Length: 451
Image (cartoon, rainbow, N blue to C red; front, side):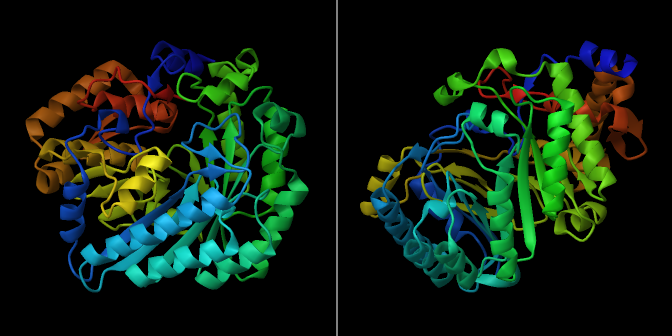
């Protein structure tokens, strides 16, 4: 109880802070980056380099009420097929600007619902990807699979196209909670899809689950996680539900008066962490868990864990290229985001140019602070030596900022021989501690609760 009181005093239960999947965060993007800058950055990728590619499919058969992702509902396949054709055209445009020999280290399809694509459209998009850039020798091709929106034909199309990692969204297995959040998906349906995945030789499995949902308590989340563990995922993302109805109007259907208190949310997270660690999973950063054989766990222990828009990753590629409406690309020079509206994005591609309409050009300080925050989010420790030698940081200024951080957070942060570290009791505050080093205006909207 004393520890919880310390966390409360430091603002854990009141703060709204970024998830820091990027730095600076997306609300700070501006129109200084457009299609010409995107092309310039694509063409600067060296011949033979490894890149990541993200394909966004912004359609769902139904809109889950808890979700704040940019997507749109459709009851027919016509707009999805047309969008797939747009992706094929966009990938052809990308190919024209890539240097010879560029390889894919990671390919990820997400949404929305990536598996809403019909099987023939899946094959067309995959063919267009690999026509533009080959998958590297140890490359991963992962797809977000909605268990309610997949069948043998589509699963075959993905497997035959080279998918070697699957990601399934679960959220919660309790039927009543599912009805409250607009996402009905039984354990039986989910288990059947996992069998479909593994029967095709795809042995790498990710799963997403949420805490902080209405009516959740420790007993209910324990039951959901125990069911999830029977599916033996290699890695799990345990995300805190972000109730932001001012950003996602569908969340007004969520009974806000039944959401757990911030203190109860912490209890749900701690119970979940306990269950995963007891089952042999390593803790990865602030909200992921992985078996020791998984790439994330290996990257953690090798000091090579990284963070990007999909969360934690073992991918070390310097460029991540986003394809499709609202996709965000990251280059060594900055961020570039496509038009968010599907119609605007499609119109741009049909006119023969990329739809990039906003982004951010990195300063040297951006790069240094991005790495500092990534260290905190991945390793709970910051190396002053790396920041000075590799990122041009001012050592004296870092010492001053480290001291101010310790003054603010007390024993939840400690000075080390190489910089600062967050001991285990302070780790619920990680995002708040990262925010301490954020040089941008913190009043921007869209941040979620700190736990």
